Amino acid sequence: MIVRILTENQYNLPGIHVDQLNEIDNKLVEVVEQRNQDGFERLLKSMLDLVREKGSPLPVNELVESDVVLPEPDISLEEASRLFTGEGLVPD
Amino acid sequence: MQARQALEINREDLARLALERKQTAIHELQGLDQQISDLEIEQEKLTHAEQRLQAKVEAFRTQKEVIKAQYSAAQAQVRISSALSGISEEMGDVSLAVERAENKTEALKAKAGAIDELVITGVLDDPGSNKSSLDQQLQQASVSAGVEAELAALRSGQDQKNNKALEEGKS
Image 1 (cartoon, one colour):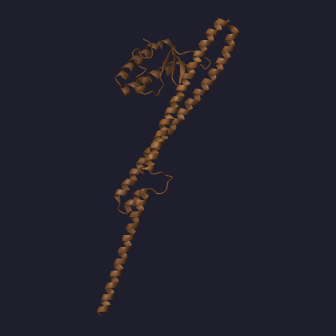
Image 2 (cartoon, chains in turn green, purple):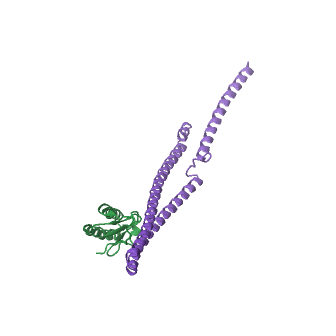
Image 3 (cartoon, one colour):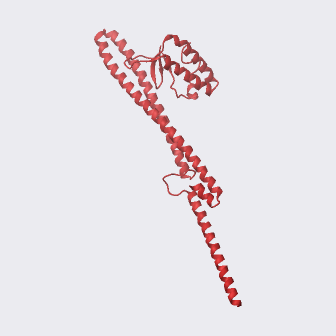
């Protein structure tokens, strides 16, 4: 699956990690709803780290649209509250 | 050092004020260091984004030629338009990065403006400016302490003279 981390890069994330990504995504929807700043920061970091660590950066000469676009690492809870609603970013 | 100078003339209030200002200045300095390194990271990110976009545009040009040469017109159109969505996503991302960097710079400018305000109102000392009002107060305090001391010396000298004259008058 092609995942973009905004302002960073596109990664090719092997399918076996998608469930875990989706799990973090759903938890993020919860903490954002609760306006839980600490939980939000922790989960956002673990979501982005998962993609950075398990995914491989897409070569520059590959021009493809991303399947999932994740927010920039420095997004605020306020900004995130407009993104993480319902199913989150990764469709269930 | 201002605080020591103030203590020497028994002005603990001024010493306290001097130390308070030192702490504020140290705090501001640390904040500025942090901001500088944040901006450097931001700059690096943008440079990286620019390079990536440039490489993508170059790749798009090359691929377009290859696709046109290898595929029928209809197939080529589909492939090129998919590459085009890839590159437009990339452009959108770069402009988001630029926008965020601009916002951060604006926030820093506002902060710098606030520090200027503090300097103007005298809460913070401007290292480049002339003497602060604290310096002036200290100077004033030590001047008046000096004046008092000299006056006292003069008075006691005068008294001695008077006493002498009195004694001489008596004899």
